[in-house]
Length: 170
Image (tube, rainbow, N blue to C red):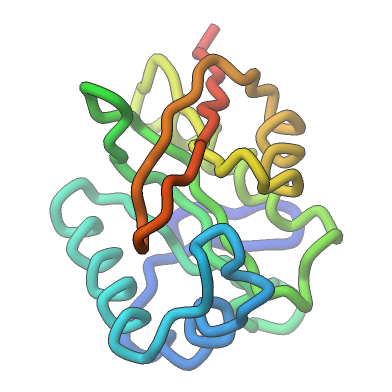
């Protein structure tokens, strides 16, 4: 286990998490900010990318497990992401749609923010969010982040405006 919150614990994902991950990545509604659901190959590549991040940085997107049931309900964690001319430490979150609007994303993201500041000793952490993803923007604001700048990413043949929400360590 990497970290624990009131209702959740976060741990590294492994190949056994592939079916639960597919429930998230292969749902059209969940993946609207990514221009659609992933196929099996894209989902497997996503999982392998997280595992390689654990080896490279000792962090990545982690499995979010509901303590009450032991079920993986999402993923949340820290990644290094390109932003304009640099690379930034980001809190990312993506949850199974059945668990939306219950405060789990904000709870997990808050735990990741604390981890970034206390364990990694980061000076700042951000969330990079597509401009149309209002729910994720609300999670960032609940974690104390403020919108600082914007940038357009090109993904799946689409220009996608993104906003960066940032919080600095005090």
